[in-house]
Image (cartoon, rainbow, N blue to C red; front, side):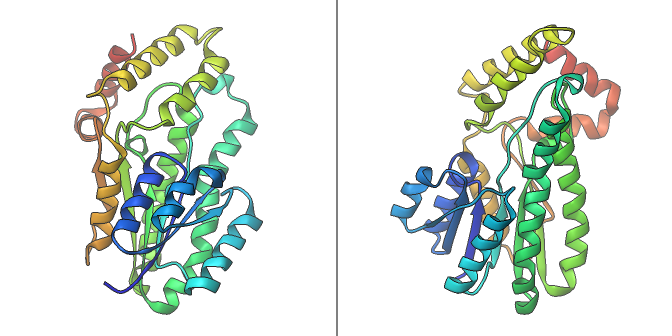
Length: 274
């Protein structure tokens, strides 16, 4: 394998950290980016190159890409993993919070992709891996803004795939299901603060309990390594698929949504959070 350069965003925890470890073990030159650089010391010890980068700050995104260009020529494989979830009723969620959700999950990712594309085009080779979610194809109440970003990322990625195909650049979408990371713990408290009281409180508290029970169940989620290994499989393939679905609940939920229709899926979700 020629020594390719990988950039993994959101690498301070969860899927991003596990993916970075996997790429390092495989022998790639791995740059790891996140706001919390102190939480990537273990990746540095393994041989990674941590960069402090807030995906919503253009100067930090530009500086990260310039550093990689100086040191390694450019990014051969971009793994767009940085993201978080804003949950709460649409009525209760301030528009500033909704806009920030899109800044992190879509616009920051898009800007970083713009910056790495010229190098890939010149080489006529590259892979862009966008970590979406099963939520990019399905839905639950209280997740409108987060789910909207993942639906948007799916369509954005499809368009990008066609645009970059003439330059031999692959665009790959990863659709994780329930994964055992800090992701779930992070969204619950703000959701309860927004909608735990008031007209949506019954639904919110039921959803919070369902989420907590799922997170507490050892069999309720898959480890981040499932997604890291799926990403590795995709980037090592000479002809990768356009989408990879992996992780607990992802395939059955997407199957039900696709083949049984909206009303059936509504009833499934409503029954789960009563």
